[in-house]
Length: 429
Image (tube, rainbow, N blue to C red; front, side, top):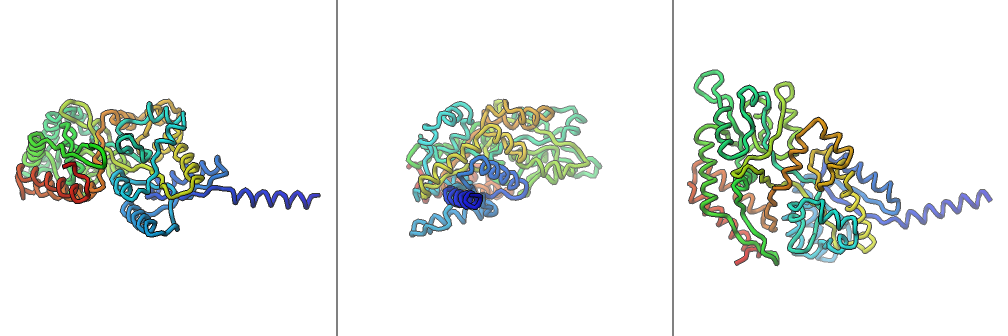
């Protein structure tokens, strides 16, 4: 009898193991981020023994995108091997994958799940839903998201008796006050502001003036809406910052000069907090304030990826994948992910989670970042956006280096938008 029971148990174990639905989740989260993600995956697998999610670290974002593109190409040629069920993806990656018809629409899953439907309608921030949707079709779930904040040295600001700027006029004033020749040798030792010579910082200034590049008009097409007079005014404002000597411009990240005291403030993503703290350790504190803008309301760009499900997997795998995506959207898991990674929560009701309340009880920075989501602006998401970003970054750097004037710079930006969108078939003519 005992032998019979052991054999029966073994048969049941084997049968159970074969009944598990297995799905692969490709990601680019290394280090502490990867450890946190693996912890969530392990918890899901433990709570859902009929599903096995395997998290596959592919490498950096570039490596992940290349692997996904090669996998999609192989699939289009008939290969059915090495197919992920879920992956991280930037919105412009998703736009590119949509051309191949391999991304699963999520509307039906949301509509048929009352809990998630309510969360999607009332708790997920609108700007994040905009990034995950094309027209009325939802193709992604927001995941590791960041906003930009105004990083500043609070001890220095207290010493000079200034507050973080709320408007663009105040940004210029504060940057002037905090620009100093400390050793009186005729050279600036401390700049009021640090700015990077990439499109990201140009976007911060444009969004601060309520100016955006593109508008989605449907059917995968985008209309160029970059206001000419407004954009030229923004470029002149940036040039004033540079020529006045109140800001230092460089292509490298700004946490090092911030930590060393070379700059008093800069605008960067919340995901960079760890680096700012490391470079500032033993020298000064790190504080955040909302981004300044012309109307005193922060208009941050959004950084980070979403999660997409692929349509090439079986129905069983799709249902299992949706359960995993739903698990990651649970308020407690959203709080856990944010607390342990520094990314912002993607849903409003995280403020009701005890762990989040304890986390923010003595630190206002995460609250500042979360509040910025209400007035943040979604980045453009055509498939050509990465190529556009690179070209506009070059145009912006040329402008800052006096290789082009305001008119030439605006025209070059428009040309980059038109030519690359037309090339990808995404320009609304």
